Length: 291
Image (tube, rainbow, N blue to C red; front, side):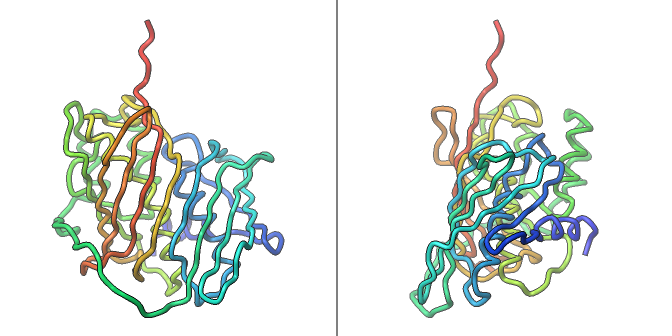
């Protein structure tokens, strides 16, 4: 296991300060605010800590309410909404400086047999044939070296490989609003189903709005031609998976309008099982030019 992955696991290991109250910390992100994937993952950890181990998470729905302060701790308050025979429901509110910055509702379910079908996995290149993040960024002379360093540092715990050029690598002309990345953690993880779901939640916020940018030939905040932030995030966990094995994140954008863009995606295991569905809406604005 890499040191970066150990540091990430430590970041996600919350301190319990009361029965339903947990405290987390932040670290520097690509942008000067708390990374949305971090707060979503930590909130899911807080919820999961109040649920029996035999009830894995099957869905979450979240709203990003305010920009998080990376220099301050985050307190997660868990409300136990339901403890039924099959389903358990939790609501989590993340608080900084006395104000909520994020809210999450998560549902957990005991395993049961049922109907089984899924959408087929789309064609995708072999992840081992794709350049690593370090290899990809080494050719981007148009990006500020400080931005490149921050990108690489933020993703050091995750081996994330784009199937094609990311928005900030090739921009200026619209492309198909579709993006694929393969990802896995930079090292093996313990057999804890909640941990694997939490890490997929963490990664899911990294690239989901890329397809919005591609549709308009925008490079994103890294090149300064858009500004944006996540607004809401939803995930459905369909089948067991491991975050330390290759996962295909197949993403597309069906719509952008009114300063908002929608991204939707499916996460598949390398052997073709549909593991997760993800939907996110975010603010995507073109900076106003001064007269």
